[in-house]
Image (cartoon, rainbow, N blue to C red; front, side, top):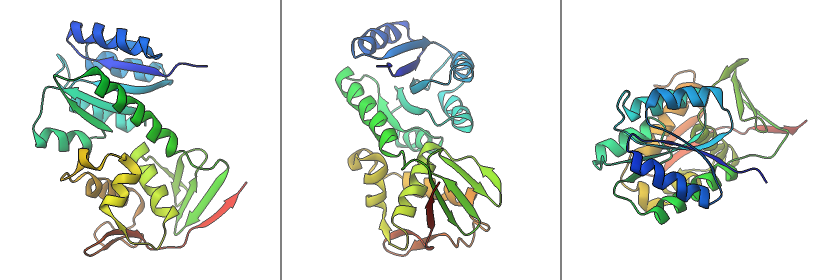
Length: 237
């Protein structure tokens, strides 16, 4: 059985050693680097990394910048592990594409649980193979996590793709932010009070709507949440 590969990005050598040793004991294949540029280079060269543990205070690039750059290129799961504990930093982390956020000092058992949960969420978002979904001017190849708008490929993050699929599976149903949060993150307490859902909706709208100021596909249901206001057509190849 192939081991899941985890990349640790942290400039603290003690944390690198502790995390690497514990993760390898848990059965992961681990790579560790101390700078953002090293991380970006590794991600470009290796396409089998399943998850990244990312510090924000790096010596060359800010971790937020590293996260945003990764998200432009990849759907790899990202857990931010940092001493920055302000709400503003957490919200910014999620806005830039983080899947989870854990503050130092931390308990390894909690980090381990979050890693497993994060990898489970990615697996749970994988759609039925060979499924093609079409509506409006969009075509979604669910088996390849690919979306086209008017024939041009649209690059979605794993969270955006998962959100789109969740809306499609529940088309014409008003979905509360809590129901979306539970479906995509499972842990409602961790994200309670944040604008994560609204931010992801905004990002998804920007990529699939013709006019973001007047969305026709993902509509806001006042007092409830959001709804995909179309009936998608699904076929199998």
